[in-house]
Length: 233
Ligand SMILES: O=C(O)c1cc(=O)[nH]c(=O)n1[C@@H]1O[C@H](COP(=O)(O)O)[C@@H](O)[C@H]1O
Image (cartoon, rainbow, N blue to C red; front, side):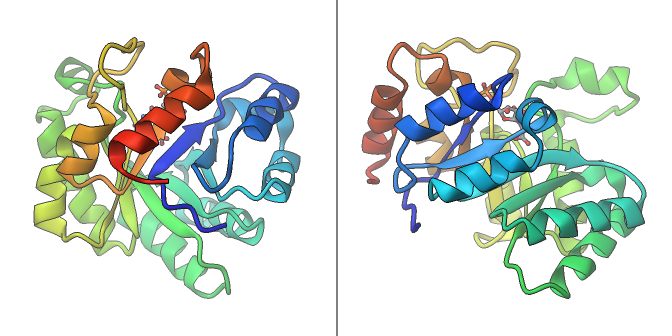
């Protein structure tokens, strides 16, 4: 399915049934979907088959962070399952990312390999508590440069960093941005947020949206409006 929309809907549900109920209301030409830790832990790899059968491209968001051998093998299993995108934590370091990128290159699968920089739920005070005396933007830049030179296709960052990363790392380096909130929607636990239109103008390639769509009274209306505002679909 060739999807023109940059929206990736986060299917953060506690059961496979609930996630499939939402997926069946969505149209794979209007969005991609993300399977994260909650859904994968309850449903296992079977959820990937079910969503593929419905025609969706899938971002498998398990944020792998472990020794190089373990992460590279996990990334390859994900690629063989046919997912469109998979992610690891950039803070796992160069050898972890390079080993994963090299292992993936040997396969015949075109899965995008993306590194998480600084979680969008974190601000400067959270970084200080874990021993990082940099602003979120400085730390994102450092990790994104490391990710790029380690062979990653792109990074997960907040849209607040998209503009600077786009100009420093080039327009082809994929920027996946969660923490997307249409004007007036609940911020929840996200700290570094932007609206969909602002995020695209800043240089984001893909916008991850969960609760603003999945918890809405009419999820399809929200998705349709966002796509319309962005001039796609
Ligand atoms: O890798 C991610 O997808 C991710 C990284 C990050 O820094 N922040 C972040 O929110 N996410 C994911 O993006 C989704 C955001 O969901 P909402 O806050 O409900 O829109 C969740 O599924 C998070 O797990």
